[in-house]
Length: 76
Image (cartoon, rainbow, N blue to C red; front, side):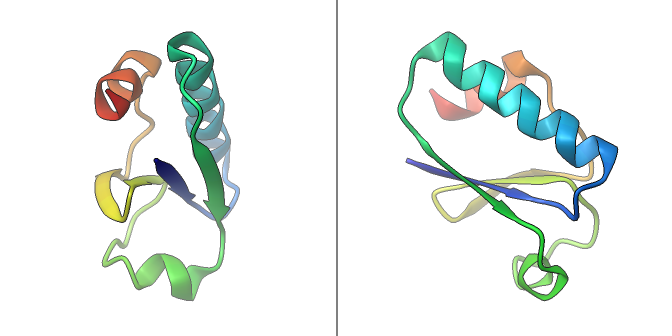
């Protein structure tokens, strides 16, 4: 599984990354986490608001900071 975090490094992007890391620690899943900060690359996913979560190439959420519990459900 691969999780991509799309965002330019704003406070919400940082909080989302922390929530993803916490969710992964709680589920003990081994996942590749990649941060994408390039605006052109982010736009290639068809999203205009960040932060966003992409799991295995599929946009799961954008424009909000998902809770740890929401992220855990996404990766199960």
